[in-house]
Image (cartoon, rainbow, N blue to C red; front, side, top):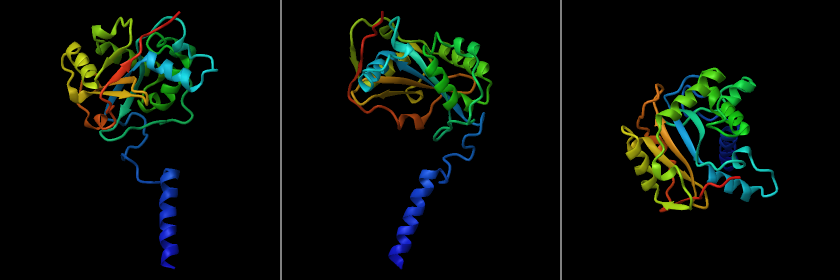
Amino acid sequence: MHKFSSLGIVTGLAFALLSGSAPAQDRRQNEPGQFDFYVLSLSWSPSFCEESRERAPDRAPDQQCSGKARSFVVHGLWPQYESGFPEFCQVPAPRLDHAAVSSVLDLMPSPRLVFNQWGRHGTCSGLSPHAYFETVRKARAVVKIPEAYLDVAQPVSATPDEVEDAFIKANPGLSRSAISISCDSKERLSDVRICLSKDLRFRDCADLDRRACRREQVLLPAPRGG
């Protein structure tokens, strides 16, 4: 009898975790507009494109991976809690019109990326689509890309700390506690993630560093395009 009961408790807990009925990571879980700060994620586009080709070599390339060569692009602007983050705060997400998508393609060069980021993260901002993407633009304007990564002709290898240091040097007021590096399974740089307050000032974010890349070196493939 006791053995059966223990099994039932374990099974019930597993079901709760899978079904989403486990305790929320934050009492405001997924309430639009209820969050503490933003993370601006800047994706190293060549890494994304290489990974996409490896994952689905027969699929037509994403718009981001065709045409002109790109280096850093905006991956997203993500509302965050001090611990954890909200996502998919409105299902279905409010509709994006053509003007909203077009307004941000110079920063996020793929309609698929724009739609995905709006549905997963933008809906948690509490802003309308146009206001959210205007906030994306303002957030991107806050961050200066280091000169070393503006015109990369050959692959670059660096430590995560070296990448962080370059951004810190180029952006007065940005501290090591406000920036994090992510990488993929092949040690390529995926994203540089920078924490910003709701009024778009650099701010520390201890939780972000727990998800940072722990590789000794990261590779930045060279941009390539037609």
